[in-house]
Image 1 (cartoon, rainbow, N blue to C red):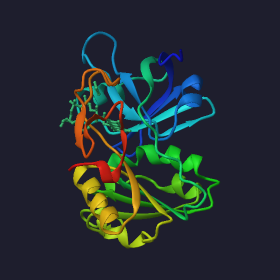
Image 2 (cartoon, rainbow, N blue to C red):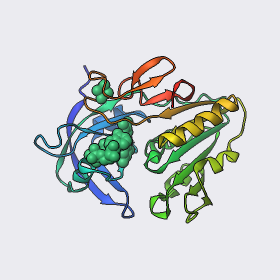
Image 3 (tube, rainbow, N blue to C red):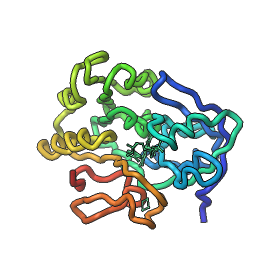
Image 4 (cartoon, protein in one colour):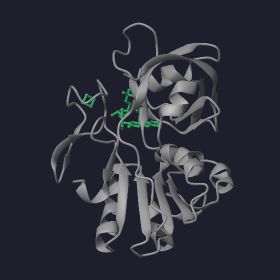
Length: 256
Ligand SMILES: Cc1cc2nc3c(=O)[nH]c(=O)nc-3n(C[C@H](O)[C@H](O)[C@H](O)COP(=O)(O)OP(=O)(O)OC[C@H]3O[C@@H](n4cnc5c(N)ncnc54)[C@H](O)[C@@H]3O)c2cc1C
Ligand code: FES
């Protein structure tokens, strides 16, 4: 059986712009195994505090390294931000269901991301670099501080569009202001990750226009393995766990 728990060395753990952090791990077995949309559970500190691991999407996996892009929002993620180069982290993963790789018939691939929800799309855009479809990122952040340098997406051939609540970067308003960039056609595929109201707006757009899409959902997790049912969410197929049945779901199946 494939080993999913391992200890990996921290190569770097640095603040990006005062709001977000990038953590790079020396993790070649994980880098080979993980697929875009899957996540890992990190034991952020030694000992029992905090008791549960914290889930993070894989932002990048290449050259034997795995990278996490994260926002310290509470105790666990702040403890993670204090971890230093050369230390080790106990990791469970890769976990969960990955994004569906679009077929060759798809002509436009749209990533819709809110804030830190951009994290799983970097690795996905790395994988889709050679896909012939037009690739677009619609990115929404609260303010300039919550926007992320999109240069690496551009390098992967992704066209980027930004909206901020205060208009400090890009269009003023929600990410839904950018939906006009989506081609309403059966050859369009949409992938979303961000706050629930944003995902609900993407779902409304997808359903109203007969499009196809997937969303990566977030819930507070304990086991991360489908055992405790603590991360269950309502879907049209009944309650499903984000950690095991997801985190990626068909957009049309989600109940907001
Ligand atoms: C599948 C998955 C992938 C994720 N990927 C990333 C990522 O790539 N980068 C990143 O920064 N974060 C990601 N998260 C969210 C991250 O797990 C939480 O921010 C983290 O667990 C918070 O722990 P904490 O101890 O710092 O905060 P806590 O002190 O536990 O909580 C602080 C605040 O954050 C809220 N919160 C806690 N956990 C979550 C959660 N899972 N989702 C939403 N709100 C939460 C709490 O309700 C509270 O308001 C992901 C979550 C999931 C489920
Ligand atoms: S966290 Fe236990 S089932 Fe998902």
